[in-house]
Image 1: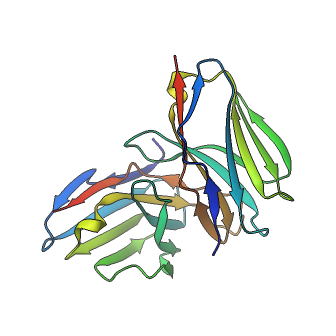
Image 2: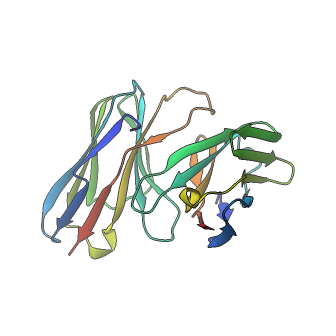
Length: 108
Length: 115
């Protein structure tokens, strides 16, 4: 059974700090990885996608992928209260597999 | 707005009712999905349609019946549901190409409550 694991949190960080969200996956053939943000009562929205080992930066967000260790992470620099949400990790191989999400609280 | 719309946004129904959820995508995608999201659980894939043909059914109870009349519209017909079916039902669409890099775009969801 393919699995994507995330710590459910909540992860609390002060405003302006770096938030680090982690995700591990069980299937080595996974090809693509996605981070979604989901505000309470809303649907998931894509933040980042990453396909190759290493780092990928987009504004305050950096995704990191290590296929050998089977983990993918999301760093949020200069965290803002508006970043408070649940972050879903997903990988793709023929279909999407989602983790249960990590709840992030950014305290003013 | 992601280009995927869902109606209704909220639905309360009794166990003996029949209702339908509707999803429409304006992105020119070829694949559409129904997911169920329950509290503290991963998104559960229910149905996948690619080019209007159902390609996956993850052993979803028969009280859920999908319909995909064309590549832009997707329905989920509901009948004799149980209280444990109360959840957020999300529709998503994707290009449907063989590329693994294509992401899904989600609609706003329908919050379903079964009494």
